[in-house]
Length: 306
Image 1 (cartoon, rainbow, N blue to C red):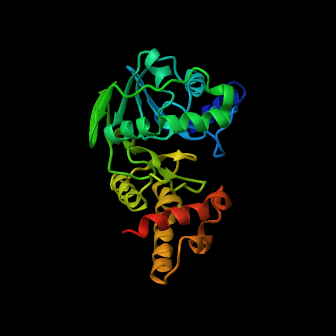
Image 2 (cartoon, rainbow, N blue to C red):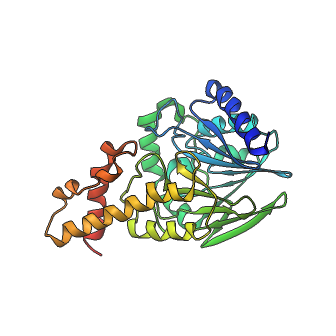
Image 3 (tube, helix red, strand yellow):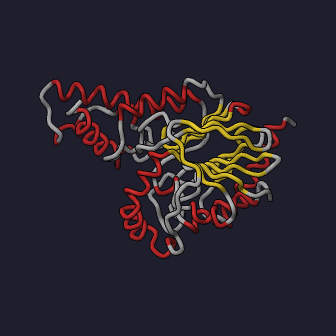
């Protein structure tokens, strides 16, 4: 049995065990000592504890590195429960890849356990700016499951990139610019040919273009990530996949939407009718009907002033 085949078999058992103990997280082996912790693709809820996203884990001889902490304190505890089925080593570092709630609101849990939190300066600024709004949203969506969650920010803050090593592995964190949120970063683990993409990559479900998103910057951020030519991509949403699949579900979607909206603007179209632009090529993506029209209007509002 090959090492990876053994990891996949073990991952199947782990996922089955976890499903009964830690909500909807699924453990997906990716490479040697590298795992994706895959949350559901539905809305935040008391069941998923705002962990409706994908998180990354790297096991080293000297401890663990967690990519994104969970969407609430209880969400972080659920991630911890999943981690305990993989390794009993401590989480030494937690990397916040952006400003969305599931990219940082679990920080306090991990700080209390002694982990060092790392994030880009733009991510921290976004977290602080949207903190109140995020708590209001989560109070409505997950209710009592938000109990105990308090804002906690990074111990190490960087501008464009940051490199550190643990257990003989080098981690490079790159903030190429705004994408889904202003502070989005990816984590490059060259020794495992793996990139943890955060919200720069969505697979299996349609991405969401938000008021603070930059669709043009998103393309550039994706290209910065793709330049590493990773064998494995751990996205911010969906299962770990290939670069080709990440491109099809994320970059190609954004590029098509910007092209269609550009044609709409050139033809004298307005924001109200922008929702009718053709996005049907991507109707295979989950939540397409819920988000595609809203994405069109948001990209229109951005491109109208370009």
